[in-house]
Length: 198
Length: 198
Image (cartoon, chains in turn brown, orange):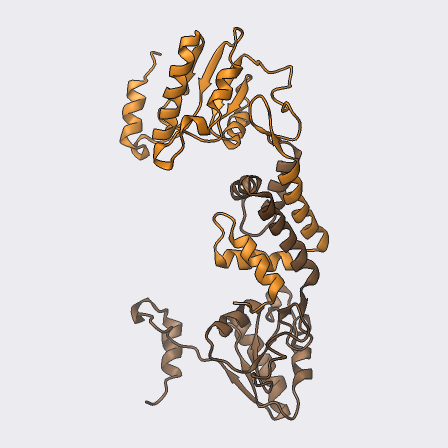
């Protein structure tokens, strides 16, 4: 369907390869880009190549970063001995937004999932173990509350506990502001089991 | 929220400016781009700049094209004297997919819409009038079946009829395959009014 000539068709094709962008969205985006001021199109194209070329992983926590170590790992205001283990940079960002955590992170870049062929060696578990030393106070397992998240957390806990380091797991329960009637039964049961005395 | 460093944040920002791409989608797309093979990221960035730089409007029909006149206007197999007037290149493509029209197009790039401040001078109506000559057999108004589409069609019809050229409007009615019970009342009434003897 080369109705618009080669260049527009190519642009639609490339946009259509992105996740969640179907044929129609790709077409809409392409026409938007064609109508953009040239500087904006240039800025978009540049940002793609800059990000792809310049962004690397922090050699300590494996977060995405422009500088190594990343701003969090190199900040003197963070406690380097409290390590929160997360699945992805997005989860790291989610916890940063809470402004409630003052330690550092360790980004696994995946969760153990035998179904998807992801084994412990495929994610950054070895690098986590290597970071742990005498000074490490706590490792907080903040993986998702899914089978993969729980499996990964348990696997890591079993490796770390023998090192004599405190290991914790973020709590499962009813979301804050969540009406009980809309919360699923497994979460309700878990919230009851994890109840705290007030 | 500069959790990922400048380059990733910039990429998320640029992607988030595209229509229909919210903050979360922009983040998802950005991480996908970061994980792409470098050639693919390059291909995406290139296609943006190539399209923005090389694509122009056909000087006859104002379709998007790499060559001027566009492949349709320069095809010897198309009837240059039957002109279908459409709002956008997308509508042109929609009719091309039917394989049922052998004339040429005229792309208005918009519809008259006083509410949005779009007046007849803002779209390619003057250029349409200039294309019409002694040989022109028919002008088919294929704008949308909306207030703006109807207004634009009526406006153009009033300009062209005095030139002694046949002007037609695509039919309104029940969509093919459409169950009557799901078709809105205005369309049903229109379909009745436009009924043809069989």
